[in-house]
Image (spheres, rainbow, N blue to C red):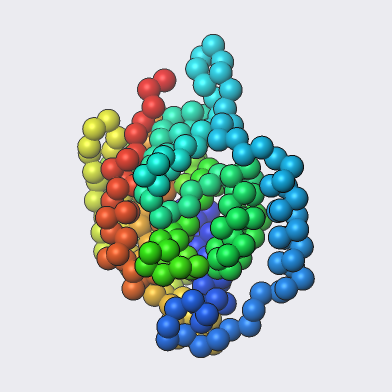
Length: 266
């Protein structure tokens, strides 16, 4: 599972390197994205959004119970994602745009929120290609902090064939695997702990790293990974990457995501 994280983080980081100059202070300007490619993407997405009905449910009822996924947005701005196939649910806080890849809500968000937030738009365009194995994508867009930017990015993935236990013996392997990824430049784990709360054991691994493409100052990030097992033979990973300068701003949000994780009874 660990190696699948890299394309998501690097695509997000690449978008930030190209667009931070316009969004946040203290960065030099970088070349804009290919306008022809963006025009094509906007046209295709707008057409898809117009043709599709925004349906929250991608699940069906069976004698054994529901199958598929369900996403629900509440009046307080939170979004709950329920995965009947994997057997879990997780809730993202207000200010986080949570959408399933290749879904109606993804297309609607891209044509709507993406039309006014170029950072969000460019990242979602990348994710249309790079997020095939993600169950859920989430973008931190807290507009009350700064409008029309994204401060971070999250992917939720499910390995349906992973029987390895999440315990102290195996947590070291998770840590070593993350720290050995050369693409996560300088990643060093600062937090590695097991949370046993309710009916869900969650392993938390967090640390800082930076990206430097040679044309800008290094961009520091903080990444946190939540691992949990809906069944003995499967593992879910929620990976969250945040601009390090805003780590404290979103600490409560990140913890609320972990606290919201629930295993669905068969």
